[in-house]
Image 1 (cartoon, rainbow, N blue to C red):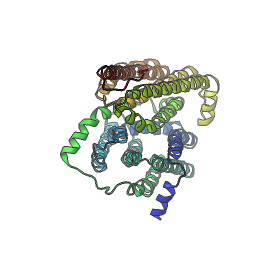
Image 2 (image 1 turned 180 degrees about the horizontal axis):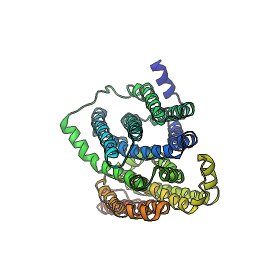
Image 3 (image 1 turned 90 degrees about the vertical axis):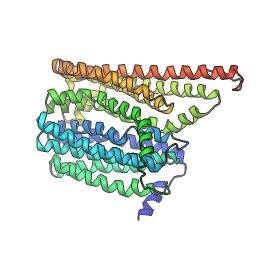
Image 4 (image 1 turned 60 degrees about the vertical axis):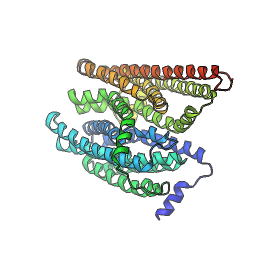
Length: 443
């Protein structure tokens, strides 16, 4: 049976086309997880439980980056295999163990200082465990992508995400018990992970045994730290309004904010997955010594920037017309009073898409230490203004907070990328002048 599952996962007539298709499917299913579960939960359990689930997802996404340590982009673009899969695997076990400890610490903090009920703390921890599975399987999926089988990785993800939605929603419909539904979802996710990702992973490596050589783990930890810190701060900054609402307002306000925030969250998820397939292409271009690589990369950058701009225009048009009626119908809650907030959030979502893209390029061209300064600066801004904006201006303040932080972040990351490209162009011009590169045109 296990071999049969792998054969089904590998079955395709065109690996490249299948990779793009299933990558899109995986992105859409993951993007729909929170909207679908919140839709069902708001009707079966009410707005308070919906608020608890919303903050649990926000915390889980933050903790997931502790488990991933920002290494997926580094691993997928490691086309010369600076580190073996066994080293990446060992590192992932270490970081996931730290993630579990961090999740427990956060839930204890919530119980002691944020008036979390026992049920709320349990739900937050269990949702974090769902994200733990996502963080752990990511190392297998990165290895599959290195081996040219992103399609298998994304099929595994799609199946798991879809069954998590089904398990959560069906349990809520049968019995509106938030804790029980979360337990069931975690159990289903674990079984599916073992049957798909872990099962298929053994076909892409001679050994799945993790390596814990201290020298190699220390080197990988140093190389990956800027990526980890930047991605961790990225998700913190992106969810800063939610954390501020959790600290200073109520669960029902949290639920309403997450309902109007959901389209921006979908943009964020789609952006991550749309940019995943380009990792190897960009890495190969950047590692090449031909001068023409620079013009090719610039064409790709312009293309992706125009795509996000088109996404922004479409998002604003939807927000101004059918956005709120559709969201109100979807969640069973009257959201008609929040049109301005929705438009502001959608703008912030597009800015986040730009930041995801530019941080991806920064990881590929290996100037990731600059990410620390960009995300660190925006995080400091967030800490300074979050309480004031949310407490004094409520929902509008939370929306503006999100858009302001995302815009600052996108501008800072874009500056890093284009500065690096300018340096690369100067290097290529010097090499051409010295006769080290064939005389072709620099765009």
